[in-house]
Every structure is written in structure tokens, then in C-alpha cells.
Length: 133
Image (tube, rainbow, N blue to C red; front, side, top):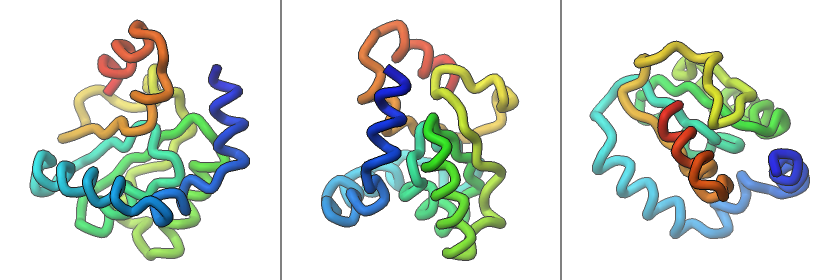
């Protein structure tokens, strides 16, 4: 399943999708701002190209980005540089949302998992991603 997901996102314009479908971003952003702490360290787990991460970084949060697809992680790095936000990122990591052993435990004030929760079809995988984040 992971290979299918990576192949799909290697061919799909995920960054542009949220521009073409702005209501999704606006609704999610409304609730993120409502429930996130006013500042702090945020994990964007399964961030794709980092559309939400860039907005968080622009708002002053310190962001760590993870995604399964190397191409999307590279795109996120490029976007952070292009937007001059790289100083607000603690790292860009290629990682499986269900295995974040590359990160220290208890270092985040909040965690986002927008992508993984609709890609993980098995309950055990969803439980695993909650445990990791």
C-alpha cells in the first residue's frame, strides 16, 4: 500500500490541490487555529509538500515535517526556502507516519496528521499512528 501511495503523490500536484480546493484548507486552518497552542513546537506528520506547515511556520510556530514520499519532503524544503521560512523548521524527514523513531519522544506541543488518517485503512495502523504522534 505504501508504494501505491508514494507512486500516486509522485504524479499528483498535492500543493496545487489545496489552491484549487481552498475551502478544505480554510476550514482546516480555522480549526487548527482554534485548537493549537498559541505558539510552540508542532509536528506535521504526513505533511505532503507542507502547505499547512508553511502556514504554521509563517505564524511563528517551530515545525517538524514528516512524509512518506521523498519527493514531497524535498518540495517542502524548497517551499520553505522560497518563502524564507526555513528558520522556523526543525527538520524535514522522510518517514512512515506509523514509525517516528527518528524523532525524540515528547518534544512537540501539538501534532497534525491530516494525510495519514485517510490513507491508513487498517485500524491497527491508525492506532499505531496515534501512538507515534
